[in-house]
Length: 299
Image (cartoon, rainbow, N blue to C red; front, top):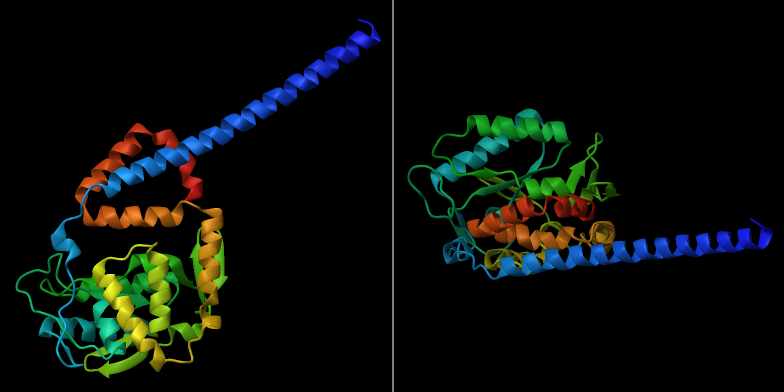
């Protein structure tokens, strides 16, 4: 083979490699687009399934005064949680309707129930402000002491997944490889009610936490809590936007590196409120295991 023929052969080979590279790049881009469209199509199908109205309308009963009226079993459970906190030296805060009522001027009356606690009744939401091992110790200690007819004590796993505490008890926001420190001032408990003890978080902190666990849609009971918390923010002027800025930074970072995380939060909430959606998810996972595996890194 002479020199000119060799050069032509090399140039043809280079052009062929470039063509293969561009074709594979276009193929991967189209595959990624296809996966996104298929996922959103399945999400759209899920939104067509209506959630049960009984769960959608579940909310706490309000009292006409600013007093919090609790049945004896709720008072006993709150006292038990507080005793456990003091014994283990682990701080905590009450979230949910009880925590919101304790920092707002809105009263709350929780109806009593007979027998075992059932879904649809008011539970007691607890957020533990300590490192992972201490949290687990707190959880197991409380659960081991609850009676069979006690209200459910929910340890708000979603909030604990988003917010961690290091070995110096310094709080930080976390998701996979993302870790952003936040001010301890945001987690100083507020105890407006002492019998039974109901330590609560500043309303600005709780609003920011809710926004991390929800995407863009809020059930009516959550929207009502947010409204009450916003009204209560005036009582806590020390919690300013500068302290809350890491929450926005965290959400932007998660959106940047895991773009499917927050869109799928709405799907998770829909699944929790409707068993039919879980069946759709399971069917999609069983039929498309490779797609699920590829999408893992985006959420």
